[in-house]
Image (cartoon, rainbow, N blue to C red; front, top):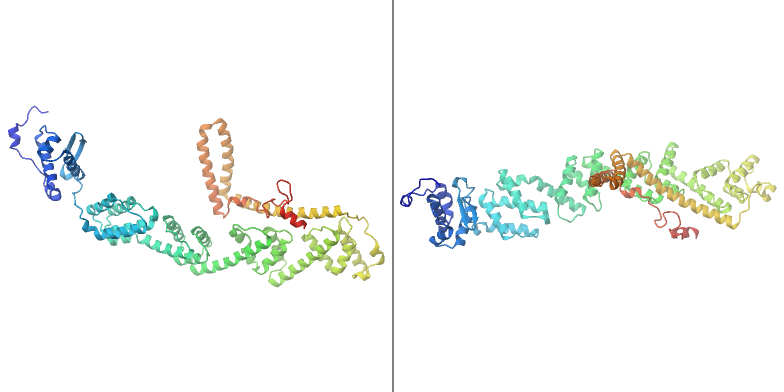
Length: 573
């Protein structure tokens, strides 16, 4: 305290200064009690008298609670700081440092605004709490944004967030626009023009795809990606129309495929998609003939079907070849090899393929007839080639079957048939009536009589061969998938890192437990990287699991408990 001070008489005759800004900005908006409290408090600051809050309240004929509330009002205006509530201690601030001035909010001023605001929120099944409504009105009072512009902000947030709409997000979006000096309806409309345009496109797109949910923010990410790839609205809609029951991920896969092939024009897209649809249908028809499950059709489309189509094979000729291949237990890879041979031989058009398949099927029927006579005969390309050779020697089916009868007890019937036919060719014997008498009754040298047990063993061997072919086909597809995945650098790197990391994890559990969290985190990153690589390749973890024809027995014919599977019993009937 200074050693000099004013006397009481001196201070009573002095003056209390009131800033003009208080008079012009705050006094008209405050009620009488608030002005009296502010001025008396200012007087006490100037006189530095020992005067507490209770005496002040009594002097001004106010309750202590109301006095505290009034100072709270002036604190909101930025004119004072309340240092303590009990006891009440107040610090006055310069009026020039205050942010704004109190503005009484007249409900009738915002009646129309409130009706429109509630209408928007009701559509989203959202309702504002009283204090949230008051905050919005205070925002409009203290900022130059037009009410209709604010309603545009609410519309934007409602479309963007849907059920997740919050009061905080609305206010945050409006404050952002105010900071950017965008106050009018036109300015806000221009700000959200792209979003509204995208929303319109997505609405039309959802209608085409049969999606009935609300548009979400992540949906716009897809649209931005497609537009970034140079695909226009018409091309996107063409792709959407081609999906019978679509989803955005499925549409994204198709549009990414178009972009990869440099197709951005809607007419080109329409032509490509139409052609692609025809090829896909052929993929499924061929797969059905081959008894192969197709989970990722794009792989089969790009690996086989596009090349076969370029070579001139179509939806009529390919199923014929596939049906023939199925009789040998072939899959796509073996069919591809056969088609390469046919293409090299010039067998491409439908008629020549029909002729080839008919000839092969006739050969297979003849082999089946031989099998009925001689027992199990392996159906293979080499057996068909043998039949074709006999036919080229001018032997009829009747002569070949006659040779089969004489080879029924031979340990290698096909070889013995070949031997007999070769001898008859040398002798010029081409009809059963010309066969020498000694040949009709003599048994083949070196032959062996087959008992019922031997015949049953041959049948069992045939069934085991059937199941072996099925297992090999399933495992071959897995090997092909593994080969394709490992040829991808990203997948290969993640796969190696996972194997190494699992070894490090096992060691760390024993020797370095403190390093476990970092190793596990690294493994999670590598798993995510591996999964992303598989998704890009159009594959899943199921691609590495054999897709057996019979999941019960895994194409072995027998269940884990040793009993014969249903599929095995059917083949014995």
